Image (cartoon, rainbow, N blue to C red; front, side, top):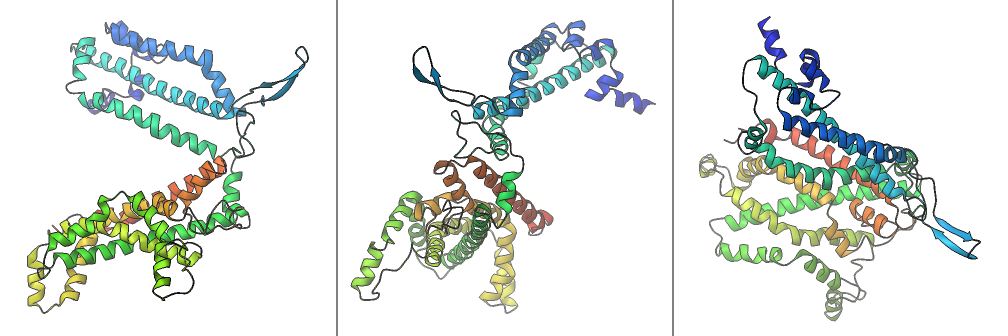
Length: 457
């Protein structure tokens, strides 16, 4: 019985509705009632003001905005002949994009109000519990002071949470909603309207017989191949470079590190644009090789598919290996020297020591780094776009919207900026998110960094 009573005193919405008195339950209808009746007037009036503002918003604009989500507009803009003036006049019509955005904002407003309603009900129930226990109820000034003391975390997190909702969650929801519409080059607001099409865009993307589906599966395949090579070649070569420089026999370690770190000091876009120019058919590399008599025709660094893809991977090694070298150098110096001493006593050579000590330790420590690098390479816009812009082109890839070296991220950039097919770009964005999330969760859950956290302690 005592446990039941204690459970009833837990401050929650269910307990407030189940065990609350008349004033507390009335707060579920008229926010702030429980606080006002228990002399927490300012807090209660604030809750009541929130409810009044929300009701006013819904009556004036909210229901209309939610209704707009069902149609995304009905009046299309165009030219209308004005008989009085004997001229054609342009009428703006509805803007489907703004209707969708404002409708989503209205949904967010409802969600925010639900949280405020829950807070009001819990606050009323807390005041009831304190009064029944004979304890003093905190006044408004005490509540404000608590926001800078025991509830300081709520004060500090309010701003970041609002920014996350405004600049991260809202754009993501808007983008996801676009994926279910026909917002493309032929339906551009405000002159044209777009409408809901359900899962039709996803069907086209997954249908390998359509131009969009053909492009998607080929680009997806190259994206995965690129991410694997760009991640693991950088990792392996960077680790080998760090091990070689870190050897006791290597002299001038600081100088070698400085030479390789120079590529990091130069802005990446500058390096990539210079390399792109050097590897053109009449660039400095081809000209030099011709003058030396090593080739007769220019090497097709950017015009042949195989050459272009290999060249991109090699250039990315030059750009990315120094980062891995720096990452690995610090970890190498933390591997206990006793392990190597014991291995040498047992007769293990350098190769055995690498595969039995260095590599397992490195993989254990750097698994989260490898996962983030892999996801980063799936979304590696700079290297691809600055070197090739997706070329060479392929007409079979959705009428040339994608090229043979395009990644999913560069392709969706082209679909939005060059071709105005926002619906397909949104679908591809969702596909990229799903691919990244599934790989990240699966890889990390299988890794020793999660399962055996104390393994190398």
